[in-house]
Image (cartoon, rainbow, N blue to C red):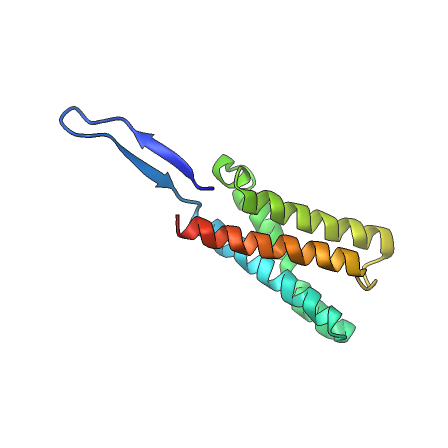
Length: 131
């Protein structure tokens, strides 16, 4: 949920509450990560070649680093469910590949779990945009 920032009333006016929006850069970057990882997992599930899968997923590592460095210290971002869910999905993928090797095909349970989390991230980002 978007944070709410209440502004004290000016001497001759009324106070107002403004919906604290997530930074546009975060929304765009998190959405792009979720979309790219989701499409890469779907490629793998559809039987794409290792080269196709790698090409599709290659940009994610840099985008994820950018996300952590640019927005990981922003309390408004880190308290948003989209952030914690995206981090959880990325950790789950990292853990799977650490345990099974980077060229391993994802298990169905990990595929389902990560895709569910990525869909939740996309839904939350859309909600935050319209709140």
